[in-house]
Length: 241
Image (cartoon, rainbow, N blue to C red; front, side, top):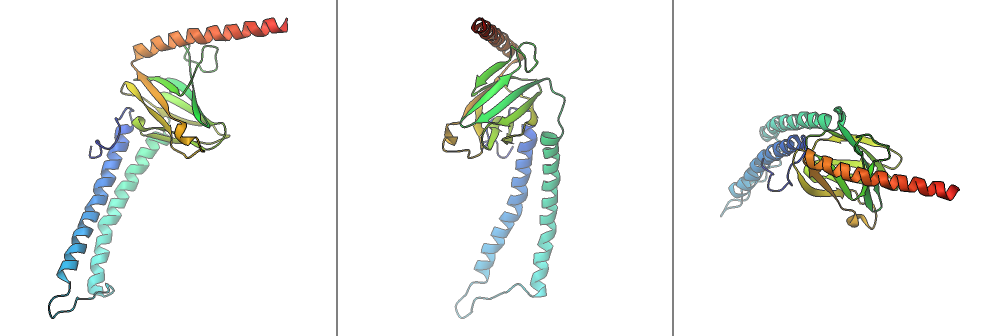
């Protein structure tokens, strides 16, 4: 990959497709840019004023010059077409073609923190063993996740650079997307939308574990979540009496 040294590690199944698209755009833009720069400076030197000879002034409107401009349009349009077709394919795979999920997480953005709700040991959302974490998202490699993204106040953007994932969070809407982690590690999550004066104080971390380590974490955190839920239930009963 051309841009490997500039991009963070790739840690999702579709990160490689997006990196390849970046590479293609870089190459197809660099080719005409390099040729244009070479011709620009070559013509400056070739047609500059010399002793006893005035600089040649060319308007470019004559047919013999215009044809060279028109001929350059064909490769540029071809390059544009290649980029558009590749971009649409990647966009469809990442944003439109929602694969069947194996697990899911809720992602809730607000000024200025992220709340992540994970399914507990039953792998079902909305039950007593759900695991809620602030600024910590825990996932497992080899599992295809759906995320349900919400915003409680203003526009935010759920950005996970190692997944090449960016998605706006819009108040009043629940947006569904997907990802499948491929590499273990701990990486940044950020809000990529200027969401207020505390925008810069809204970082979070994604913890990508092996399936075994993730299962152990879920078992431990689910038990704690159930204990909290039972304690809260008993407190309500006592208050009612």
